[in-house]
Length: 361
Image (cartoon, rainbow, N blue to C red; front, side, top):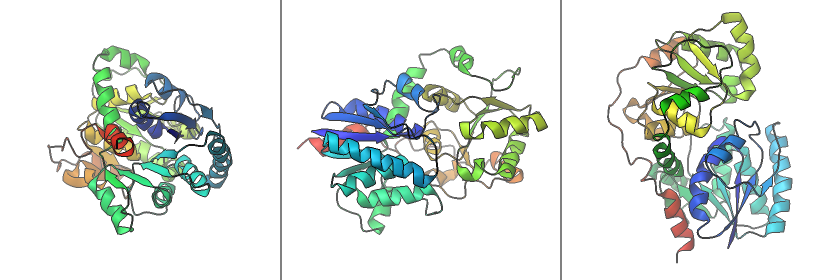
């Protein structure tokens, strides 16, 4: 049996690291990288450090509008499907790569496996919400990380071949946390690539990430977020997404931020280390909200909704507006449950469970 797996963005590389390791025990896997994330620090480094098999195809679509990016993927993916003749196409999550891969497969009647199915933020303005809804309705097998995701699908009359298996990201987090515990702290500190000079000791820190268009394409919003970071009581390690590098350099010249440690994007192992040792996490990422919870870290999410609604219980994840006052209020919140549910996202065995459902008769 042959499966074409399609990835294109950082979270999908991490999920593929967990799934491909198990999947290849059962079937022939053809791995396609669309090139949606193309910066070496957002792409190549993950294949290297996570031992993900090198892609059989690299589409190199790069950046562009949603329509242009998706359209280019559609054309190139269809060519690969027709050549490889897979039994299934496997997709992850909710990116443009996910939707393009599912659409191209559906049009030529190749059944689709959707890993991380059923998530909903109920905000269709988000491109990710559109992508995940459409992909779910096209898929033959839907593997859900939580019971909430199963119920979301049920409310849309999707009940056939729906399975709750836990979260493959939990598989990856637990697997690689064991690895980083064997690496000295000083090695991770030395891996930080500073964008601006930094002379303070980093003993305690917050970790922050931004990548969503509503936070990165509005200069005033970015100013407000950085204004808040500058007022935190301990330094903020801030890996700068390539799309806002120019903004950050301009703002740094104007403001000379002294509490924000601007660094180049981190590899996955580095991100795990700095998150697992952070006081709290500030992000607009969906995946990092969940990863932080798995590592027992509280999160301030710079969005008004989240697809990971389970993390809101006990205020482990606090949704926050993007003005500096709201962010500062959020970071100071103390009404947070001290207990985490270690099995909220499964038992780190999701990939094995999925493969047994698909291939063990």
